[in-house]
Length: 173
Ligand SMILES: Nc1nc2c(c(=O)[nH]1)N[C@H]1C(S)=C(S)[C@@H](COP(=O)(O)O)O[C@H]1N2
Ligand SMILES: [Mo]
Image (tube, rainbow, N blue to C red; front, side):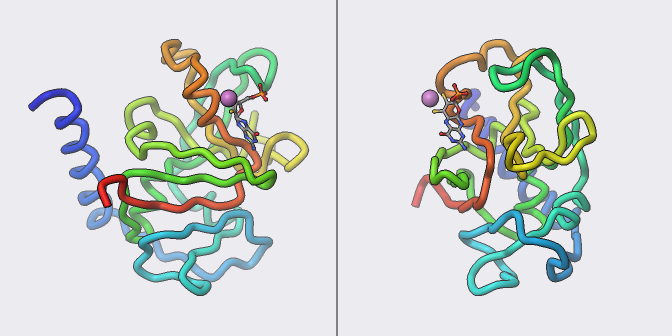
């Protein structure tokens, strides 16, 4: 298999194993809704979508990324979740995320970025909840220090902050 095929295969493997191996029961949101997930979702909790408050997202396995980036001076430590876990938890399928911000900025990110580069969707920086004022409530954070080759327009453009919604879809459909 060439690298690309192998990557696809492992993405597939990861998605399928996590769907069966990781079952997280989500309750209805109790706090303010900070994220709407749209797309091919098995058990939506609001119309065709799945809505989340912060506690629901913080219940997912949490990951840390410590890096310098163009938005905050010096190395900061971000805490957040891996959207692959989120998709698995709600049985959502797809290899692409179309993410929309509060200012209606939109970017599309291959799901594979979140396993290849250890990227996360952060809700905290240095253990403090990110407010809208500090680019929260959610922001895509790449590990630019561990993967300096990501320091390009492509990945800066994917570093979307003030995330409001995510649509999961299949690029091959
Ligand atoms: N919410 C939001 N995130 C965003 C953007 C935006 O307009 N809104 N622009 C993107 C693009 S195209 C790039 S290159 C970088 C730019 O960051 P800067 O405006 O701090 O230079 O942020 C990305 N994330
Ligand atoms: Mo950009």
